[in-house]
Amino acid sequence: MVACWWFFVILVAATYTGNLIAVLAVSKTGYPVQSLRELAEQSTYKYGTTAGAAIYNLMGKSTVDVYQKLWQRSLQHDENNVKSWSEVIKKLEKGNYIYLGETTLLNTVSYTDCRFIVAKETFFPSSFAFVVPENSPYLPAFNNIINNLLETGLIERWRAQYYPRDVCSSIRESEMSVPDPATVKATLGAFVLIFVGIVLAMLVLVFEVKFNLISILKFILSYLKRKLINWYIKL
Image (cartoon, rainbow, N blue to C red; front, side, top):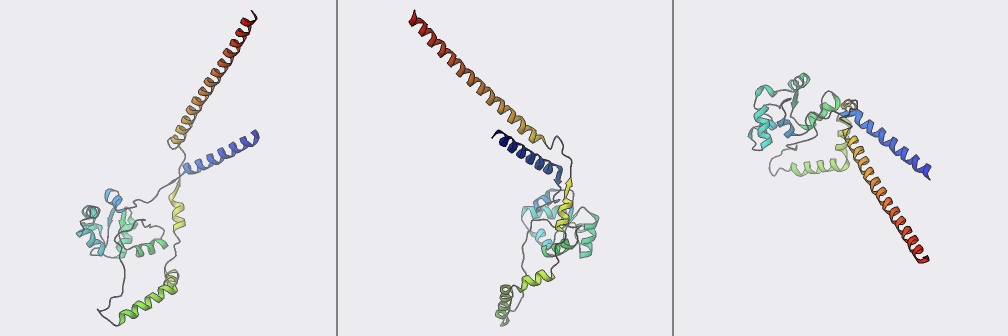
């Protein structure tokens, strides 16, 4: 039984140590920014969008605090905005630049060009639609055809067939995991837990020793008391 217990302890300790070293040895670099608020508060990256586009007009006219900050700190300056996609690529290639644009287009680029990455947060959702005159006889036909395409799965099939495949996620994930030697600072939490565990163990040990000593003293006193009573009776 004791051998099985020690085997279990060694197995758990080895597993924990291996996982701890693996976590501490690799650090995640992560995204430069993950939200519009982080983008507005940072000063390392310049950012912009397409001049005159919907996002540009939104930021310039919005009363939302974070949008106003983005506009005042960067978007209102013409040198940070672009007029064509080729300008976007040039600014991104130079570095320290973030482009605000339509998610579908940005994903298309990031799926095939592993130099670029798209932040997880999205904003200003918009939809695409076919515009027809009011009371047009073509409206029911368009609705029926689009519903049929959705229900039969043709749109998803075309999307999978013609939309670029994401070949960069796995590559980017491995590149964002940077080996980093474990330091005393990184393992400080583990040492604190060990110290707390040792202190608690010592307190429990002191309590057990004290409890055992009291029990032994009570037993000795009880034994001596019985002996004295017996001796007194004999006298």
